[in-house]
Amino acid sequence: MKRKDGMNYAPEGMRNDVVDKGEFQFAAIGLDHGHIYGMCNGLVEAGADLKWVYDPDRQKVNRFLEVYPNVRVAESETDILQDPDVKLVAGAKIPCDRFALGMRVMDNGKDYFTDKAPFTTIEQLNAARQKTEETGLKYAVYYSERIHVESAVYAGQLIEDGAIGRVIQVIGLGPHRLNASSRPDWFFKHDQYGGILCDIGSHQIEQFLHFAGVKDAMVVQSKVANYNNPSKPELEDFGDATLIGDNGATNYFRVDWFTPDGLSTWGDGRTIILGTEGYIELRKYVDIARSGKGDHLYLVNGEEEKHIEVNGKVGFPFFGELILDCINRTENAMTQEHAFKAAELCLIAQQKSVRVESEKS
Image (tube, rainbow, N blue to C red; front, side):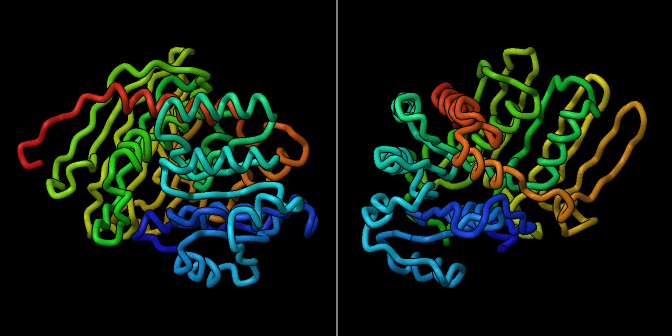
């Protein structure tokens, strides 16, 4: 796992099989983003069998085989889509292409698990909504900054247990390291990556919906800017937004590409969750100048103030739940409406955003 490179950050967790060997087979199509490794890790650790891989770029496939040497290499998508043993396809194509792959997967009767952001336009979202309603198939989304972070998983459990009362505000900070020289061309093309609020902002909105129990929300304001990358005019290196949930909870988040080189990891991601009876702070990937390990949770309520190091203690239940949801046609890992609502709100935030003009850019 590359701690300094967010694009190839792939958490590894504890083995916790929810199915017998061979009971649930899946495939990987589209290796454009390194999150595919985290997605596959999570499913394999929950007992799924990775049968196939396909990408038109053989170099990407060869790198994938270094991690998963027993996977079969498909000659085309068709090999995978027509294999009746494959129940789920995981994909991390260029953001603008994720929807089309999902439609092909569902047209062939399989569930789909895509990297975030799952869409770059509202039209894509509406078509996917219709397809899932017609077929009953899943269009699952890898919102990794919650489902693949143990401190975030544990925070959700504490909130459910009433540790901080009713959640009334979530503040999310999502800085990332740019590593511009190693980024592919699509990363800098707005219509391909969708904008900063559509892309990495999707993590923050999904967390707000989950932690605050929000079913719908209004985007009150949003801003984007290119402060420091004039040679990449379509890149947005800063964005923020404010939302109000249908239950009165509020959200502010900031995302950016300004992680300094001196930080030991790719981003100092933090979340502060305020409840009526306490609060939680998550320091997800590092506790700067104190601990190079991630998954630090700070809890303050009417009974205690506590620092809990969660790494290696909670695991990632989402992946096992997703496998069982695909088998049993349930919605325990994440409801389809939740996954789509997070996507919808990030698209709205992107559309409504005011562009801050920077003298340098």
